[in-house]
Length: 364
Image 1 (cartoon, rainbow, N blue to C red):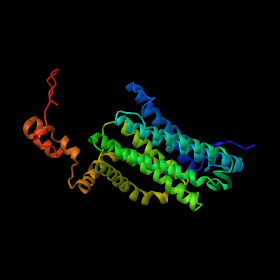
Image 2 (tube, rainbow, N blue to C red):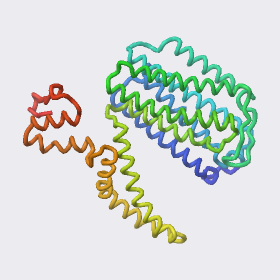
Image 3 (tube, rainbow, N blue to C red):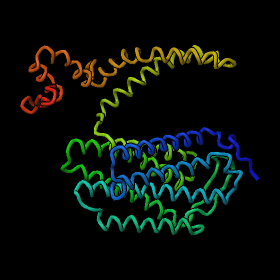
Image 4 (tube, rainbow, N blue to C red):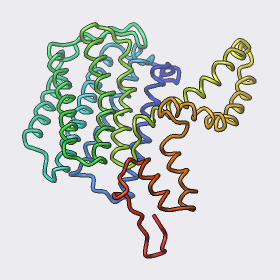
């Protein structure tokens, strides 16, 4: 008998993966809540494969966390083989549903149905993957275990074909999303850009580490990283599905740079001063530091963000801040403010209109 206690899972990699699982579950719950709030149809739309993909991601991350806990040596090789195959199937279905999601999305854009040949690819590869993973020794022959995070998986004869199926789904998913960009509105382009960004991070990290490092080099030390990064695809794609508000690469870079500069201002001096003093009184030091950061973060962020904006945009005010600053101009002269707004938005003056509501005569 083994002792299933908290100590068995308290390892850094396992905690990282389990924290990722918690984030995914919270996001999926929020996503379903928003769908219910909007009275959206789930079955027969792109929402169903996205939800299925998210569930598979939860299963995949959880099964990978197992290999970085004390449960791995305690339960032995047979359980390791089972969990390795379970992780295989969970990752496969995550890729498969991501592909079918892109097919469904493309079909909805052209107001049609998923092509039969696309359904055929999905079903064929799914049946093959189930067959080779449920049969013994075809994908995983043995797991040599030394300890948590210290293991080597001996692959079976069909593993290479299994990975080819995963790579095929990556390529086909990207092809579908890139094809959606043709003759699309700017909003659709923004949505697909977010989806492609998330998919590239997740799928390329998976292909590089699981294919390159584990299959070809036999190095399993970074197998926890692709599951942790899988959250990128889920969040990017989910955000694109739920909202119509998107941020440019420059604006994201501006926010990231501002946060990093503030962190550097706090970490470098405070770390140099207080780290040598924290041998026996960590909590006494940590409490006032946290209070200091909480009180001064907002003020410091406002000051530092101006320099980040200058580095990114060449101006101490971002385009968003410049537009918000037009509030006073509208009070003085609507025509002048509209001209300045058109210049900031790069919209010709004859294409920009001020609209009023007949209900309360409010200008928009």
